[in-house]
View (cartoon, rainbow, N blue to C red):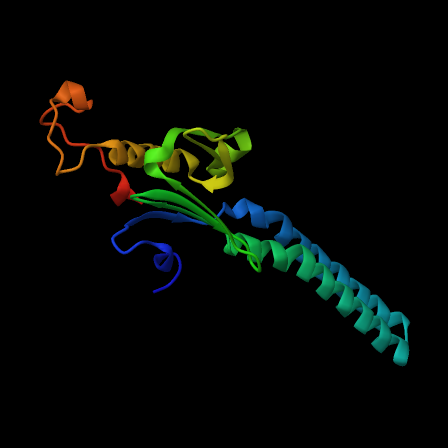
Length: 193
């Protein structure tokens, strides 16, 4: 059983699993292309203008500089992106992140009092944004770069409503008391994900 399945309770159902939006990888990708081009140019200049042991020394220095830059500015952000998980289950919202040190936040559905989203023009074009979750008596938690933030907002809203719905063992209330019209099914977006 792989992650995130091993983080779930025995009868808990995973509804949504997302990594941050791919826009987090745009700058690291550009740095990789630019650093590789500069390193290639520097190696070409070194080979055409230097001779003997100087070529080897400059090549090693360029290679080490390229490796350090790519490791720091490309590999680290890519690992951070890959190790960040936004999960929605039928019971809770879970956020897990970290490569060496893992950090997690769990928000039970019955404690969520408000769900909001925010996205500007560029975020709307890229179909991403910030999801804000207000749990009872806590400050709002903001989760940035959530892909398809409007759909996630809608799904989470329905999950919160379902978590607050009476279960099958409790006596049923009439349509007006429960906020649910008789004969009308609850909307379930889980199959669309």
